[in-house]
Amino acid sequence: MNLLDSELVASKLVQAGYEPCEDEALAGILLFNTCSVRDHAENRVWSKLGALRVRKEQEPELLIGVLGCMAQEHKIYLRTRMPHVDRVCGTMDFGKIDEYIAEIREKREGLVQTGDGASGDLVLRDVKQRPNRAQAYVNIIRGCNMPCTYCIVPATRGVEVSRPIAEILPEVEALVGDGVTEVTLLGQTVNAYGHDLPDKQNLSKLLRELHAIPSLRRIQFITSHPNFLTRELMETMAELPRVSRYFHLPAQSGSNEILQRMKRLYTREKYLARIRDLQELIPDMEFASDWIVGYPGETEEDHELTKSLMEEVRFSQSYVFKYSPRPLTVADDYFEDDVSEEIKARRNQDLLAIQNRISLEKNQALVGKVVEILLEGPSKKGEGRFQGRTAHHRIVHLEGVGPQQVGCYLPVRIEKAMSHSMMGQLVDEERFTMDSRDAGDEGILSA
Ligand code: SAH
Ligand code: SF4
Image (cartoon, rainbow, N blue to C red; front, side, top):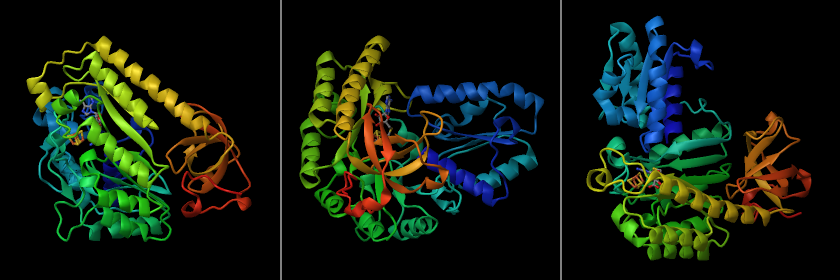
């Protein structure tokens, strides 16, 4: 969501005549789009801002802005601690960023703007302004109404507001018209989409409308809450083959005690039942989860239950976080952060070790098979290599392709499996069915 917000801010500024600058040292305006979910993310911003103090003294015309959740959370305090910051602009107010910058340049005085100004959705998106030619994020619901006790998001992003289908559809059509073949729909509780809109608009209805766009080949959505995974949504996903077969459904913990204290509003049994229902409808569905270790009061038994849930579902990916108390949350107000850093670190490692083993086993099962990947760009792993993703969101590295193939769907034979990715070799395209709709959606292709 932050990546998309940054993209929208950039798009707005380019429309207003500004140019993006590759080198931070040469930029005249520096905008930091921030995250408050964990203190680690915040600390990085504080140190980055602190380091700019000297530059601002030497270069007073440099304009520094802080956008997003930290701006919303710390509001005036942010400018007290970092007086060289010119602009503080919350999550619901960056739609007018160009006007704010013009205003500061004129008046040369710092301003704090949070609250109910124009949200990002009011930014008229220039679909041509985006980092990837074939892939795009589309926001469909902002904010969060859930009561998760550890989470600062509802405080920084406000209540849920869905965008009408009539607004989303033309945006996706315009993106597809400009070459996009994969969209990722975004929301904190993306599957609660539409409950605040008239005419029974919901995620199933939206998915059906998007699925009818002919050249849109992959439709993903993140992040779903287990409680809004309805039968209707499961059946819709099963019916629509171009809806992703990788499903991010954070469990957070495998212990009912902890789930209850987190106010996740489901039990381990209910979570598992949803997974089983979806597996029955879509046998090749892969799952991913977020986990928090060291939540206040988490015992060794609770931790064992999380480990066993991981083993039971055999997720294809896990994002594991050490609990960090956040201001403006119930857990911070009422519970002591009583699990030591050492234990948090060990539990974190425990979960990662289980996940790495399972991911490796899943990837090894694909060695020798041909899968379809969407080539995403140069590989982070090494010179001359490129990387792409399968229909199940697995990363594949390969050689022998070039930048001109980025954005293409390619058949690749898997040669080697690691836990986080696989190595593959491009195979003769002619011999394989290239349409993911016919690809049996492991994205496994047949000769
Ligand atoms: N809306 C999404 C996720 C939002 S935050 C959802 O409900 O799934 C992303 C992840 O950060 C969460 O899933 C959770 O695992 C983690 N997280 C949130 N607050 C945290 C905290 N205080 N400490 C550690 N991890 C946290
Ligand atoms: Fe945070 Fe829970 Fe909302 Fe996700 S659903 S953003 S974890 S409050």
